[in-house]
Image (cartoon, rainbow, N blue to C red):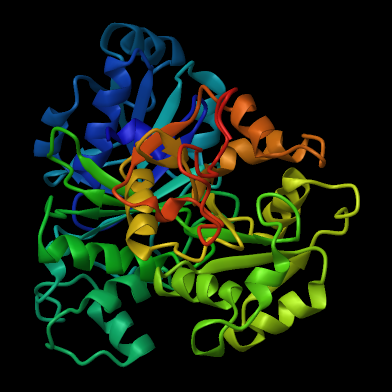
Length: 453
């Protein structure tokens, strides 16, 4: 993915870069991407840059220049760095309060702000006066480099290690560990200090390799970081790569539909004790938990008390579809979507009778979502579609407007141009698998187009 796709920037954004391990390179890379797409990109710093970094920008000029001159420079160069003083080998930016007057006077599409200093270190905890993030900031990109892993936790290698040691009791001079990065990055007093509450926050883990053990460590850091509801996503990549973002990890929830109507009608089957005395519904929920889905909601309808009792030992949250008498699959889905935390970016839809659901299929769907291969993903085996289906948050508002009595065919038709199919090598994606159809008839799956069931 390119930066602009991963970060989902829009005209009018003020983007602040904080942290350590590649902020300037990231700001420059995003600036050139947007400029090539025709955006008018302004950049500045609320701290300082080195004078040799001026060569990274196609145009640099004083922030005190007349707005007309800045606008003309944008027209000619598309990407302009504004600065204040240059002295002692450093370029200093204007005061942080200057941002609002700039936005009001210059016709740029976006403002990029380097708002932190890390003295070239790969990982940092901020000092008391850091970072300097403008109040107008709408997106904060917090940077850390995986190069920090294994380095000694000391002032020579890490910026302000004393703050980490004081807050968490990390041992000075010991090798930096993966969980430490996540703890600092998600901490309101450290990695999130000074971040406006209304701003989106994306972490960029720089110098992530394309494959191998370190890629797995980066995913673990992302998962731990996303335990903070203030963090919207974690991007894994390398700022100098041709496709600099390999994947974008975001919080994903799961909705298990156990309402007694489509797509899960057989409540007797899913509530009846089966293997090791567990009902099928509990078996499905356990597989979702093993897949490390953090936000699982079980949607109940008929026989809600029995359904809740079947999964009580798992500690999962349930939501009751109060419109069940006149509702359909969309009614259950709407109840579930409303119950998910606001920061969740997508939901896996799982019928309550999909007893053969496999964690590896869940993993492949989530990986496709992280790679940017779509945000309405349906697994497909042969010519047939099934579950779990992943539905991204941008579609939820439209779903919430749909009639509750609608079924999944109506959803598939409404979003047919947005659907991405993910081919799998198992028929476990078909729910109600214990009741196989007669030879020559199709298995039940996710209805996508007219003529399919």
